[in-house]
Amino acid sequence: MGLTRRYGTLVAVDHLDLRVESGSIFGLLGPNGAGKSTTIMMLITLLPPSEGGAMVAGYDIIRSPASVRRHIGYVPQSVSADGALTGAENLRLSARLYGLPRSERAERISEALEFMGLSEHADALVKKYSGGMVRRLELAQAMLHRPAVLFLDEPTIGLDPIARHAVWERLRELRQRFGMTVFLTTHDMEEAEALCGTLGIMHSGKLAALGAPEALKKQVGADATLDDVFIHFAGASLGDADSEGGRYSDVRRTRRTATRLG
Ligand SMILES: Nc1ncnc2c1ncn2[C@@H]1O[C@H](COP(=O)(O)OP(=O)(O)O)[C@@H](O)[C@H]1O
Ligand SMILES: [Mg+2]
Image (tube, helix red, strand yellow):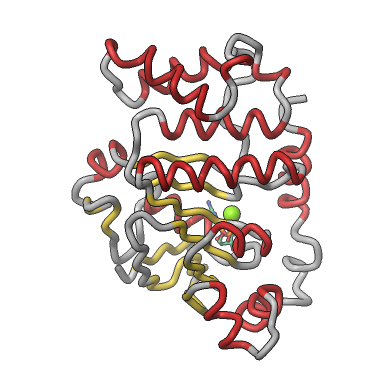
C-alpha cells in the first residue's frame, strides 16, 4: 500500500491505497495520464514501485514477484497476440510461458478456445482474425493457467459493440466459473457500469473516488450519470490537451487497436 511510482519529478502514481475484493470485477477509471497503466504495471510486477507496495493474489509484489506472476493473467493495452501464428500456436506459446505441465497443455488449450468461442478458428492465422477475435484469443492466453487475478488494460478499446459485449460476457463467466478477480481499466462508462461491481476513479496518480457505480452516482447527484461522476471526480483536467479527445499517442493507439492486425 502507499503504492507510488515516480518518473523523474512526475509522480505518476501517488501513494495509492486500494483494496479489491476477491472474486469481484473492479474497474479503474480516469483520464489519460491518470496513472492507470502504471498502477497495473506495478501490480503485475513488471515495474518496480518507487515507494510502497501491494499484495496481489495473496503475495507481496516486492518480496515474491515470481509467486505473483504465477497467479495472475495480464492482457496489455496494445495487441499482444502474434499475427503470424495461428490461434492455437499462440496458446501453445502461452502454455509454455506459464509453465503449464506438458500433459495438461492440450486440454487446457482446447478448453480455453472453446470458452472463448474460437475453436473453429484455432488453426487460422491471427492476422486474419477480427478485432474481437484477437481480444478473445488474448483473454484465452491470459486464462490458460487459471490465474486468481486477471488484469486487463482497456480490454475493449476499438471493438465494435458486439465484440465488446462478447468480451464482457466472457469476463463475467470467468468470474462465475473460476472465481477469478478481474481488475480492468476503461474509458468506457457503459462498460464500467455494466461490468464492474466496484469502480475507482483515478486522477493525477491519486484515487479520487471509490465505490459501486450506483453509490458513486448517488454521491454526485439525484439523477447523475456515470459520466457526471467521472467529470465530478476527474474533471479538473477537462480542457487539457489530454482530455480533448486524448493525446496524439492515445488516438494513434486507439486506431491501431481498432484496425488490429488487419
Ligand atoms: N515510461 C515512462 N516514462 C516517463 N513518464 C511516463 C512513463 N510511463 C508513463 N508516464 C507518465 O506517467 C503518467 C501516467 O501514465 P499512465 O500510467 O500511462 O496513465 P494512464 O494509463 O492512466 O493513461 C503520465 O503522465 C505519463 O505520461
Ligand atoms: Mg493507460
